[in-house]
Length: 196
Image 1: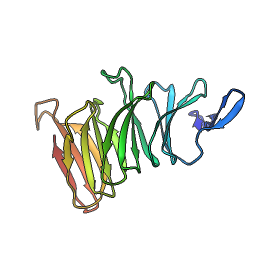
Image 2: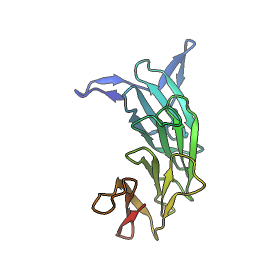
Image 3: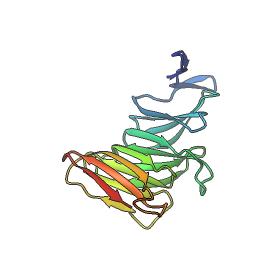
């Protein structure tokens, strides 16, 4: 459901009309939903593993991608990816993967894997990196959006990771604008700061 700021219901998204027939798009629970940066689309992930793009002007829906299990998190890049020419959609799933999709084409751009269900994902502020973690396997990982020969950076933990954040390092710590700081909070009652 989409609401205006005054609380008025603007749209109820779940079914579409095609060739005079009503088609149910989400048949299971919707786990996460996020607007595209321009506000034209709403991206939703559900328990069937679908990533659905809803066009808020027309009410039409397209299944952009499919995971084997539930989609737990959906994120959209704030700008178009220079290589793909469109914003990217990032999903985290119980199927042990995070995936990147083209917002318009639905092209699968990358797959990032963990040893257990992926709990959360996010883009860096420049949209060049993806940060993912898994509560169950106790790992946090940093990936490049552009293809690289393997894992960019692994953050080992002895127990469940509960939260991650990513920021550019302040100049007082490092004058290089490409240096990142990563913070991880875990079940062992520690916050770790990593430099990348």
